[in-house]
Length: 92
Image (cartoon, rainbow, N blue to C red; front, side, top):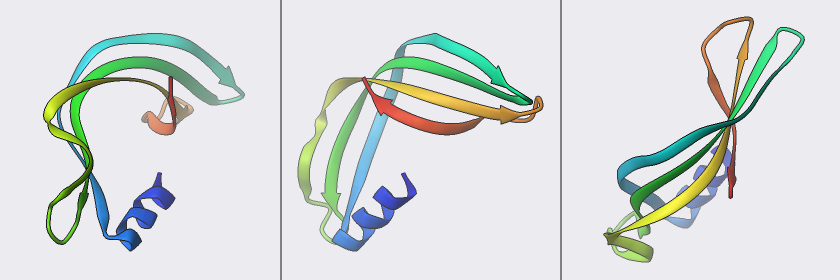
């Protein structure tokens, strides 16, 4: 994700996402490896999502006027009961 954000910055674009609403979230799996906990959640949500030019604000792809639906699988990790941190995002 960090690399993708840097690549977008270098290209002079940014991903603009707004009006995000979770429609459904399901725990797909949870497991432990040693003292590390993992949880994978499948999420279906709606949002306005577009790639825009940083300088002009012009929409290059996507649509900021229409809500679209997406499904992603997010994996979270935590060490020994600590705070959950996002580890991976996969499109479904």
